[in-house]
Amino acid sequence: MLEITNLQATVADKPILKGLSLTINPGEIHAIMGPNGAGKSTLGYTLGGRPGYEVTGGSATFNDQDLFELEPHERAAAGLFLGFQYPVEIPGVSFVQFLREAANAQRKGRGEEPLSGGEFLKLAREKAGLLRMDMDMLKRPVNVGFSGGEKKRAEMVQMGILDPKLAILDETDSGLDIDALRVCGEGINAIMRKSDKAVLLITHYQRLLDYVKPDFVHVLAAGRIVKSGGPELALRLEEEGYEAVVQETAA
Amino acid sequence: MNVELTLPSRKDEDFRYSDIEALSTVWPIVTEEIEVAAGAEGTLEIVETGAGAVARHVAITLGKGAKFDLRVLTAGPIYGRIAVDVKLGEGADFTLGAAQLATGSETLEVVTQVTHAGLNATSAQIIRTVLAGASVGTYLGRIAVERGADGTDAEQSVRAMLLERTATANARPELEIYADDVKAAHGCAVGELDAQGLFYLMSRGLTPPQAKRLMLQAFIAEAFTGAPGEEALSEAALARLEAIL
Image (cartoon, rainbow over all chains, first blue to last red; front, side):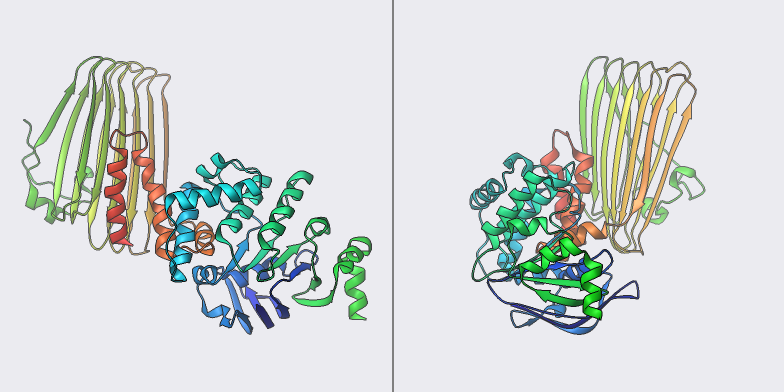
């Protein structure tokens, strides 16, 4: 589904990703862990196409398409979803209005019929319920006045509505209390754990992985993946720390 | 009816950013007088969406406890000038919500003179300007609080959004206060659309023009919030917005 080969990227002319390779197949859940500054968020933003994140080498192929040839909205229409670590507040624009336009823009991009107002509200209500979010919150301006946990749950509701093929979730677990963490984890499973979908979880901590069991865990350090393994690698990292595991690899 | 006779020049402070040549085609401006009696309420919508030059001058006098709600949408004229003079009596309340949308070489301006002449009157002005191309958008807003007009509450919120660096926004809020216990809040900002917000919307599948339109719609809507004709005003603004983007 996604094949990243020797990816190099800079932010403000500073090299952050230095030859990152990763293959994600349908049905798989991958976790990328790593210390602060390793390039985790840069990976997410680069794949999402955020301005300022410049690809200087390597490639990423997403379902046979060159990902870097696509604009951010085309990546979304192709089935990529980026869950933000810090979801942006947009005063005056309601979630419902924005998500319906977004869903229909994506459908149009794929040559599908747009959703009617009624169809959309039904879908939104279902996904909000999955994340135990009050539908009234989706009538409010995008993320404005939402707590950290509410913003993350709203991200997952968006993911449910937009129904992507691949979700890249950047620290979805940060800012969540224990209950919200479980709700989000269950939401990710319900929406994305399917044989034709895949997830890339970017996280610092093992705790989200208790709910969303990864098939593969990768350690990102200094812009490259330095170690890959199964779920047991995340447990080891939690126990021994990044430094020990990263150094062992270097040796 | 008052008519200003001599064509002003740019040396005249109130016409400093005007398109004098276009102004000359609609000169002189006939003042539209509105008087609202004590305790009465009035509303007015000024919607100028034609392409030709337009210049209007409205003078409103509000009696004791009178209320007036004025909404302005200028979106289309090559030159559009909306000048508003308001005189507030004791306890009167004035609301102005104005949106200006321009592109190309259009020049739009809202010029206000709000005079608090009595005790405890309130005025609120919200001006939202969206400028593309090489257009010019101006707000000149003078608030005068006369001697004895204690307890005045006068608010100005002025924001302009430049869609291109070739556009120009001018904003000059002014306060003249000769009374005590006066609240006069004013905010003034000229900026560009928030790049983070745009990326967020696009990452969800909105095309760049859709994302911009959505954010600008919200920006303009602030000028029409609570207006009797809120929906129609917003729709008329949206139509122009689509054309500008």
